[in-house]
Each structure stands twice: as structure tokens, then as C-alpha cells.
Image (cartoon, rainbow, N blue to C red; front, side, top):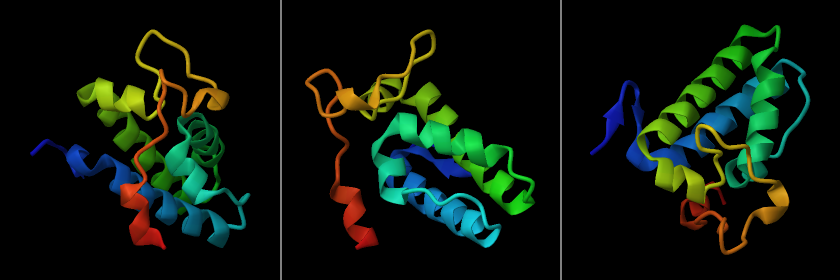
Length: 119
């Protein structure tokens, strides 16, 4: 089992959803801009834009939740670059893949098996 600090990177996909739901709730409570949690977990570039927006929030709960998610994603890219690339993460030294490429042979769509728990 791969554990790095408080995060278990073996369960990155489901943990990312849990953390994004916490971020979404904190953001709504702080009256921040709404975002799509499902899209957050499916599109790396969309998640990056949401994180950029929420990291600068004046509400400490929102900024802390965004920072936790950012740390999880950075650690995941560092420790599992192949899995991260499959999810659409740009690897160090490369740029982010456009969202329109999701589902292409070079960038397959994310595995949806972990999404069943949200329904």
C-alpha cells in the first residue's frame, strides 16, 4: 500500500471526490462560485481552474480544502506519473492536455467505477 503523509495514493480517485465534495460544501457555505464536482473528478484541467480560483478565497475553510486537494494531486503526480497521465495530468515539463482530448486513445476517459458511491 502506498501512503504518503495523510493521503493514501492507492485510492486517489475516490479520495479526490471526497476532498472535492468538502471543497464544494465549504465554497457554497462561503458563498463562492459553484462548480461541478463530477466534472472536477473527470477533467484534470477543469479541476486545476477550480483550485486556482478557490486557493485565493478569503474564507480559510475554502482555502484549506483547496490546499489539501492540491497537495493530494501533486503527490499523486509525483508518485504515480503513469496513472496521473491517464487521468489527464500534465507531467513535469509538459503542458496540460486540452479538455477536448479526454477520451482520445492517447488520453482515455477516467475510470468511472469509483463514481457509483456518489449516486
